[in-house]
Length: 70
Image 1 (tube, rainbow, N blue to C red):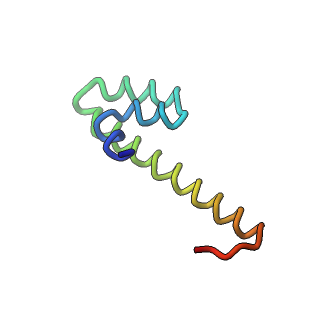
Image 2 (cartoon, rainbow, N blue to C red):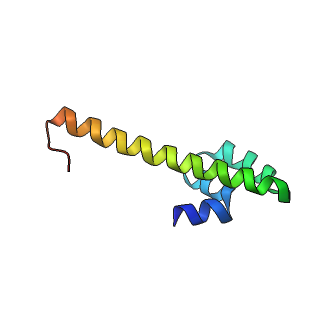
Image 3 (spheres, rainbow, N blue to C red):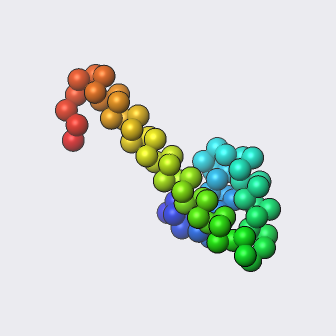
């Protein structure tokens, strides 16, 4: 669902993820047909980075607590 939102509405994807200023810049970029593709890539990369950061934080927390990683 997140990737579909990032492709169709890149600015909205960034804003939902808490990057309001980036979302505004992305909206300006995607107002042109040529800017839509870079805006979509930007939103997808941002989404991937956010998910990787959450995954890393979960791993660090599990290591600190001494739990087994599943």
